[in-house]
Image (cartoon, rainbow, N blue to C red):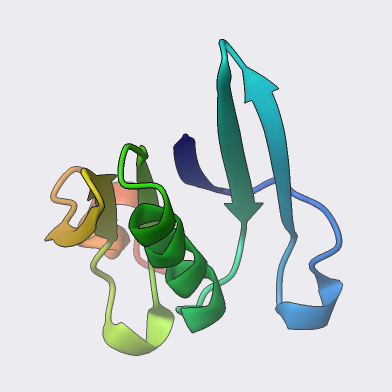
Length: 106
């Protein structure tokens, strides 16, 4: 099973602060879970689902990116592999202001 989370896109997210969506499908003989969202705060429901997939299907792998405005401007990357989810700081996008986005007013 593959799993991933991508910022932006999705459907039906007006109720929780941004567009969100998901899909479960079959491809290349496996089950794939695709999640998308645009939400500026951590959602424990979504990260919990990601961790649940890792536990239930230990052969799964995937990556989820999280940016929580309340936690500063550091992107986190949750990496799922071999039944575990490891939290890493993504230095390619962090700090968000200055690397991915200009400071306001510029």
